Image (cartoon, rainbow, N blue to C red; front, side):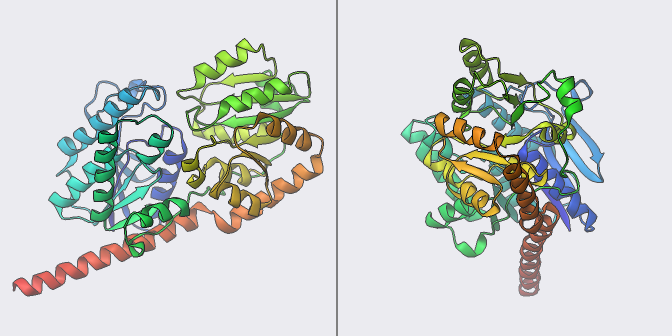
Length: 422
């Protein structure tokens, strides 16, 4: 099959969606299919385009036997709702202008949200080129921004929600990454038979269990004998990281515990300012890391934190980093609720606590620090759990079954229509 994948973010950018889509695409290619990715020039999350991509409107390249079409877009840091929206709209426009008729017609389009503008571009391509599209739902957009208070204009909200439902209905298939998303979409009138949940997962060959990486600790000037709590990923409005700083404040006199934050995001400057204001010496911030180095940071940690804010809409979210952490055999402290919490409880790999509760977080950290055997058990349990349930290769093959079914139906309908015309 010829699969065209529309997504604004793609490696060498780092992040959960980039990992999901690139690893899925690599597995599809290994299974004998042709994949073309329609994406932007890399700039996320800093807004800086690397020198080798600068000054170009369009570029074609091949990575891991995947054809990649890169398009100009308004590059901006991952902060500020208005600027990010302009970036989304610019990407929607340029892929339509530059790639609507580029190349041979694919068998199917797959478009990955969260921003709805990419889906609009895929819908237009689908209609004009007579190709079915799959709407992959990684966030309930715009719903989550309404709950977080980012979107408040009721007329704009009504318009965006109407567009969202329209795009669900026109899609040949809808692939949410969580069951909570699927339930939400079904309640809003989308037939359940066109919805197939394909969760996030992990490349088990890349993320392997390891002992503590003391050499990296030394390189980063971290205390070698401390219990290192790692948060790695976006520092955004949905992650509730202020409560982690508050927990660090509660534990400030315990020299045997240290917090390491790695990543970028809209709230990072505020978090650094808060830590400085509290004069915290047990907190270190680092810039975002290339994906190939993320595994090294998991290896240096004694435990990892996977937090989300105490917002109802986030109860349907499953942070994909928790699968990577389990694959690395590290225990998790999870200040969250909902579907992700239920998965982690089943895995026996995490201390699940209420979100945005610094006292509960500080206590959970002390419990794990004082119980190395419990940490070891949680790490082993987590690795076994993802091996059984969240192997990315198996999930990619499940996705192929969904794609093949839609393509066969489309081709069958086309043959019937041809007979009628004759």
